[in-house]
Image 1 (tube, rainbow, N blue to C red):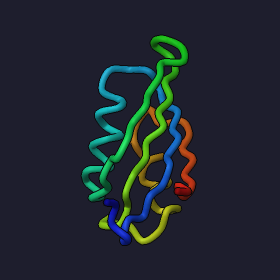
Image 2 (tube, rainbow, N blue to C red):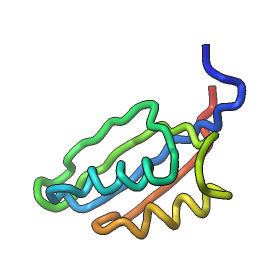
Image 3 (tube, rainbow, N blue to C red):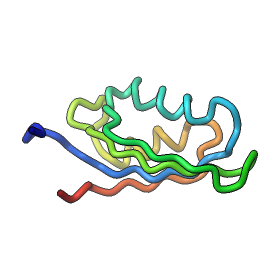
Image 4 (cartoon, rainbow, N blue to C red):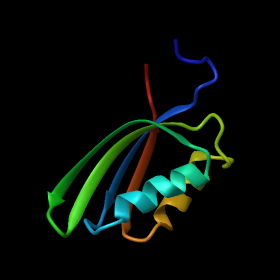
Length: 89
Protein backbone atom coordinates (compact mmCIF):
# COMPACT_ATOMS: atom_id res chain seq x y z
CA UNK A 1 0.00 0.00 0.00
CA UNK A 2 1.41 3.45 -0.94
CA UNK A 3 2.54 5.71 1.85
CA UNK A 4 0.31 8.67 2.69
CA UNK A 5 3.42 10.84 2.79
CA UNK A 6 4.37 10.28 -0.86
CA UNK A 7 4.78 13.35 -3.04
CA UNK A 8 4.26 11.89 -6.50
CA UNK A 9 5.00 13.83 -9.66
CA UNK A 10 5.14 13.11 -13.36
CA UNK A 11 8.31 14.44 -14.96
CA UNK A 12 8.43 14.78 -18.74
CA UNK A 13 11.86 15.46 -20.23
CA UNK A 14 13.39 15.93 -23.65
CA UNK A 15 17.13 15.55 -24.06
CA UNK A 16 19.80 14.86 -26.66
CA UNK A 17 20.03 11.19 -27.62
CA UNK A 18 23.70 10.74 -26.74
CA UNK A 19 25.47 8.07 -24.69
CA UNK A 20 25.21 8.73 -20.95
CA UNK A 21 22.49 11.40 -21.12
CA UNK A 22 19.87 9.32 -19.29
CA UNK A 23 22.48 8.13 -16.77
CA UNK A 24 23.29 11.77 -15.92
CA UNK A 25 19.59 12.53 -15.45
CA UNK A 26 19.00 9.56 -13.14
CA UNK A 27 22.23 10.36 -11.32
CA UNK A 28 20.90 13.85 -10.57
CA UNK A 29 17.67 12.35 -9.19
CA UNK A 30 19.71 10.03 -6.96
CA UNK A 31 21.84 12.96 -5.75
CA UNK A 32 18.63 14.77 -4.75
CA UNK A 33 17.20 11.72 -2.92
CA UNK A 34 14.32 11.44 -5.37
CA UNK A 35 12.94 7.95 -5.91
CA UNK A 36 11.99 6.84 -9.41
CA UNK A 37 8.74 4.87 -9.34
CA UNK A 38 8.31 4.34 -13.08
CA UNK A 39 10.27 5.29 -16.19
CA UNK A 40 9.32 5.17 -19.85
CA UNK A 41 11.76 6.50 -22.45
CA UNK A 42 11.68 6.68 -26.23
CA UNK A 43 14.14 7.77 -28.89
CA UNK A 44 12.32 10.34 -31.02
CA UNK A 45 15.15 10.77 -33.54
CA UNK A 46 18.18 8.52 -33.23
CA UNK A 47 21.29 10.45 -32.27
CA UNK A 48 19.32 13.68 -31.83
CA UNK A 49 16.32 13.59 -29.49
CA UNK A 50 14.94 11.33 -26.75
CA UNK A 51 12.10 11.78 -24.28
CA UNK A 52 11.22 10.25 -20.93
CA UNK A 53 8.22 10.21 -18.66
CA UNK A 54 9.35 9.51 -15.10
CA UNK A 55 7.05 9.11 -12.10
CA UNK A 56 8.93 10.22 -9.00
CA UNK A 57 8.40 10.32 -5.25
CA UNK A 58 9.87 13.58 -3.93
CA UNK A 59 8.84 13.06 -0.29
CA UNK A 60 12.47 12.70 0.87
CA UNK A 61 14.00 15.06 -1.68
CA UNK A 62 16.83 17.46 -0.88
CA UNK A 63 14.96 20.29 -2.59
CA UNK A 64 12.49 22.88 -1.36
CA UNK A 65 10.20 23.09 -4.39
CA UNK A 66 9.33 21.54 -7.73
CA UNK A 67 10.65 24.70 -9.42
CA UNK A 68 14.01 23.98 -7.80
CA UNK A 69 13.89 20.40 -9.12
CA UNK A 70 13.14 21.67 -12.62
CA UNK A 71 16.10 24.07 -12.40
CA UNK A 72 18.44 21.30 -11.21
CA UNK A 73 17.34 18.97 -14.02
CA UNK A 74 17.78 21.71 -16.63
CA UNK A 75 21.39 22.06 -15.44
CA UNK A 76 22.12 18.46 -16.52
CA UNK A 77 24.09 18.46 -19.80
CA UNK A 78 21.99 17.59 -22.88
CA UNK A 79 18.61 18.25 -21.19
CA UNK A 80 16.49 20.47 -23.44
CA UNK A 81 13.11 20.62 -21.67
CA UNK A 82 11.56 19.63 -18.35
CA UNK A 83 7.89 19.67 -17.36
CA UNK A 84 6.70 18.56 -13.91
CA UNK A 85 3.15 18.13 -12.67
CA UNK A 86 1.59 16.48 -9.61
CA UNK A 87 0.44 12.93 -10.25
CA UNK A 88 -3.26 12.45 -9.71
CA UNK A 89 -4.41 9.13 -8.29
